[in-house]
Every structure is written in C-alpha cells, then in structure tokens.
Length: 149
Image 1: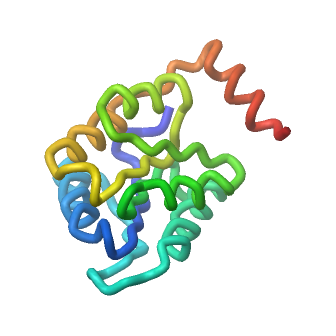
Image 2 (image 1 turned 120 degrees about the vertical axis):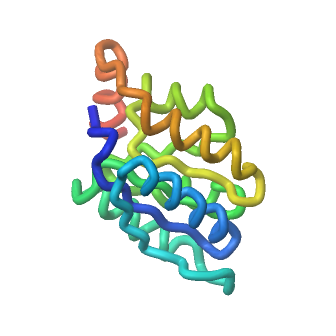
C-alpha cells in the first residue's frame, strides 16, 4: 500500500489548469508534498508532454502516485497507460475512484477538467488517496496483466 502522505506528482494541459491548481491546494492542505510538472497557465499546450512526464516518473518508481488532468481525461489516460507499471484510472465518480484503488491498485488518477466539477473532483481525489489496495485475488489479476500480452 502506498503511504497516504507520500509525495504526489501532478500534471495537466491548458483545459484543466484551474482544476489542477485547486487539487494542489487540497493535497497540500492534507500535508502531501506536490511535484507539479505543469502546465503553468491557460495557454494551449500538448497534453502528451505533461502526461509522459508524470507517467515516466511513476513508472520509474520516483513517485508512488500521480494525478493527471486534461479536458476529458481521455487523452491523459491513454498516454499514461502506455508506460510499464502504470495503472492510470480515469474516474468520474467516487465509486470508480474507490474501486480503482481497491481492486486495481491505480497509481495515477486521471480527471477531466471540463467534465468534472471542483467539488466532485476534490471528493474523488480524497477517496482515491484514502482507499488502500486490497491485494489477494486482485494481486493475482494485476500480475496477469503486468506480465504482458
């Protein structure tokens, strides 16, 4: 299980910049150190640049958990899941966030800045951070897809 207070790496594109800033505040209020790889404003950027930075750091074990945001969350989740050992979960509700941790040991949370409101996003982040991986039969399943095709 990842330590709930372990540092989190976060990145976004222009479409989710404002939500990223709010989530950073939430994380810091919980005593969690945040490494922000950008973007730093609302000017148009290419989301893969930021998704790759976060996913690579999680894949290499430099961070146990990451958070990625773009307009819908779809692009970031596709980028992140190309990296070995990354289990990025695009979550639109609390149940998905909880189950992504309990059963899938998700190590990157992905949110859509244009589709998820601030209050719900904060609740999703909190649930995702607070939910441990159950292991057991779920570990066996993770091992199955971590071993390749």
